Length: 224
Image (cartoon, rainbow, N blue to C red; front, side):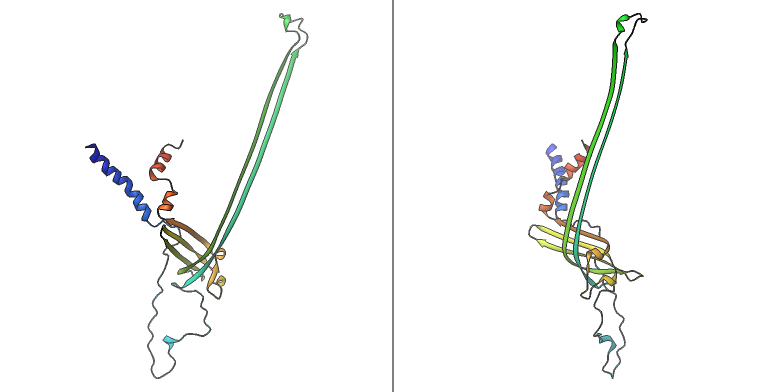
């Protein structure tokens, strides 16, 4: 009877780990990650002329992204460095002295020459330091998912790389000023507002670097 109860419990304990192994990691980038451009209205073809408005392609038209569904390449050139150090110290001393040199009028004449000394010393010192360095380079092509009233472009996209040990996900979203887009339809990630950049992975290698759900439960239950 006990074995029949233990087996279902073991299956329930293993299933969350198996689901996490093959699930796509959650994201915080702007959604959706892609958008389909609106269909163009079909213009009535005029016959009897060489020029056709539906098939025209301007020779000097700018190829930069400007509509929903257009794509744009982001050059990831993120590099941050931060350092912080603090130092504090405090010292406090106090002393007190007293004595009885002549005790002729005191019933206990043995108190003559008694000295009293008292003192308090307090000292505190504290130091702290922190440092962080991050670098992220590469490229990712994203899709315009919205065009704001002022012309700024909201972009979002994902690059998925599948390898034999798991999957790697690179995600990016943010707001782009069209004036910062180059003639080759690229923009630096440092020029993107509200940028959200993610690099995550899935697979057993990534799972092995994370604490198990049961361990996390006991850590939360017994933090000491």
